Every structure is written in C-alpha cells, then in structure tokens.
Image (spheres, rainbow, N blue to C red):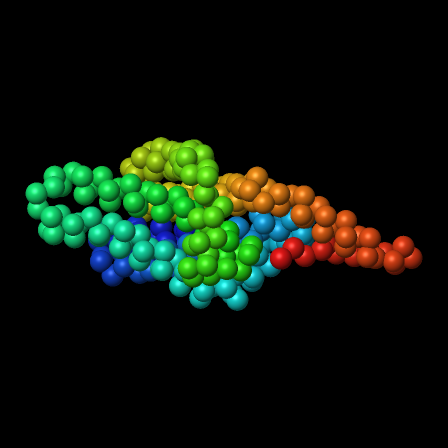
Length: 236
C-alpha cells in the first residue's frame, strides 16, 4: 500500500500536484494500514483467527472515527506547541529558549502519553477524547519506560529505511518505489511492536492477562461436556 505513495513521490519530484496527491494518499492509507496491522496482531494475541482480508475489512466500520480521533490528537499537539509561541509575544522579557523548551517538553509529553491511541481505538473501541485519556492512563507511571520503548522501536524501524533510501537514491524513479516498499515492512513492524507493548502495559497495569485467562476458563466451563467447543471467547 506504500508503493503507490512512493510512485506519487517519484512523480512529485517534478510536479506539485503529484506530491499533494501522494500526501493525501499517505494520510488515508496510513490509517488503514496501521489499523489492519493492529487488528491482525491483536487478534493473534487474543488467540482469535484472522486473515489479511478480514483485518482490512474490519477497518471499514471504524475508519471515520479513527481519522477524526487522529485529527483531534494532531490538533491538540499543535495547540500545545503554539501556546509557548504565543507566550513569546505576550511576555517579551523571558528568554525565548525557555518557551522553546516548554514547547518541546509539552509536545513530547503528550505524544508519548497518546502513543497507544490506535490500539485503544481498535481493541477497546474508544474514540475522541476518551481514547486520548485511556492511552494516557496506560502510560501514567511508566512514561520514561514508554519513551525508551518508542525510541527503540523507532530506531529499529527507521534506520534500515534510511540506509536503503540512501543506497537507492541513485536509482531514478525506482529508488522511491523501493523505499516505499521498505516503509511498508518497517511500518508493519512498528505497528505490531506497539500493539504487543500495549497489551504488555495492560497486563502490568490492569492484570489483563489474568482477567483474559479467567474469561477463557469461564467460557469453557459454560460449554456442556457433551457439546464440542467452537470458537474463542470474546474480550471486551
């Protein structure tokens, strides 16, 4: 799904129209791609059967709420960044680097606090401010640990793309296409890693693993001995 974006990027080197189309395509496809990967990994974690087709099909019902929540999150991050900028003009006698430091700290704090928003939207079906608050609750008390994990996942997923993109930059047209393919692979890894870490945070903060096990045992005991068990219990 990233390859068409890479084609737009290759064509966009000489055309603003193709560049703009590529950006719009990436914004929409990025949400769908991340959602499908998260759905697939979450179902595998919860021991449910899932296929690539079913994962992408499941994104249809939540696509608009997800896009709306993402836009809300980005808007709030922009507001957090703009408040110190406004302070520079309101309070001129305070050094500008202090306002810049506050801006960086504020954006970093909320960006990490809301890192699990995609997983919350898909697994728990929370959207809007409720999704932002839920992600922040999972991060609370372990912000530095979450930051370290986010940096590690980012480095592991982005360094190979950077290396390959430099190597492929000398290839006309096909260089960006190959880079797009690399983005697809590393993007899938990053989404999968964050989804697994999301469940890890729930297990540590809420004993989610014990609750899930108890629900499985309860569902199994509810099946009559003479009836074969089919399917897997659902988890709210």
